[in-house]
Amino acid sequence: MSDHEQTIEEQLREQLSSLGARAPGDEQKPAAEAAEAAEAGPAEAAEPAEAAEVESDLDELASVGAQRDEYLALAQRTQADFENYRKRVARDSALAQERGVAKLAKELLPALDNLDRALGAAATDDPLLDGVRLVRSELSGALARVGVESFSPLGESFDPVVHEAMATVEQAAGGAAGGTIVEVYQPGYRLGESIIRPARVVVAA
Image 1 (cartoon, helix red, strand yellow):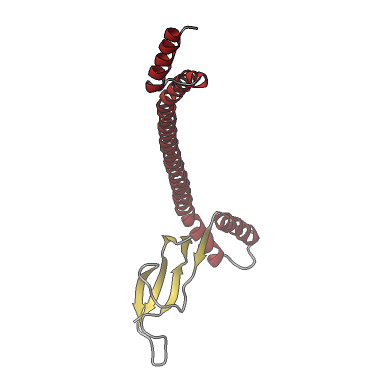
Image 2 (tube, helix red, strand yellow):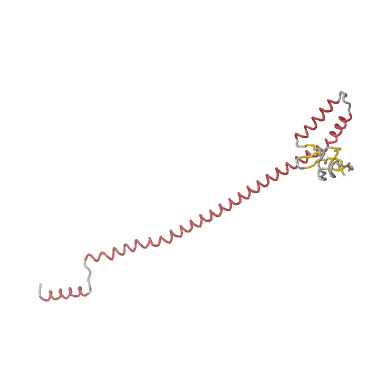
């Protein structure tokens, strides 16, 4: 190699050195960095899409939960309405049955009164007396089985709610206190708390 060629080669090396030429291994780094950037780009772009999808799923779950709560509340209201309806029907049915029994009892009470009069007026040796007692007992038992019971308030204090005063009588000294029932003309009849017929009584004045 001539001196001129050596001079040119040295000048080229100095210029390369001044420009900061990369080593052969460094030439691969930009390509690797570019590849990493290319791979990171789609991943970072996918993150907002996944977040949006998760948010959409959460909104859908919240909507389904709200709809479930609405259906549950509706079912509970329907069940409560049905229970109230069932109780009301049962109450109305019981009241209707009670009214029917009371109406029938009122129709039968005159027959009972007549049987009592017949028993009171019959002679003790009358052969029909036992038959009348039997009929009276069966009729009274039938009323008792449906809840109708008689009451005779002799000796009790007069109560206009359950008693009907037919007369008042003066009492001798040491007799019954005023307002006390001293005689029962007709027994009263009740059905539970309802009075079918008040007892007809005589009250001490």
